[in-house]
Image (cartoon, rainbow, N blue to C red; front, side, top):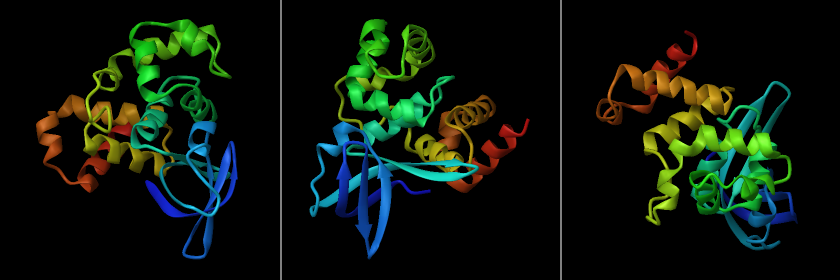
Length: 199
């Protein structure tokens, strides 16, 4: 599981960067928003999400934590994969997307490349209850508890899709309270989530 990268920018285009860390260049897919915050030769710190497929390991990078969290959350919507999720975060900031979803502004979401009217409607339907924290102007860096973020990242790094990870975590939540879960170790939670994912 790779959650952050800090190093020197060696290569940069609107959709890709290579960050050198200790003599090793790490390739990261980014969007134009993140690209604009980077400079070749300068130090960079990216929040990352590793997407595991049978034939590839792809690292996606973001200039801030809310964007990374939302990137993983958007993939819980049926029909949306990492490439489209990256495109959404390139077109809309986390607060803009949350506002569009909560006000059911289909036209704002439709402008994102790869999202049509039906995709926008599905996004609103499936995300509406999950995005409230992004629109409240608070300084919180995520929409969900830290344990849930860490568990989601762990499941995704094991090859679960974002949607399957979300489903497994929700299964764990049906068996115990948030208070109980918050006192547990990540390893214990991961074991429970993996068990529920096999049901």
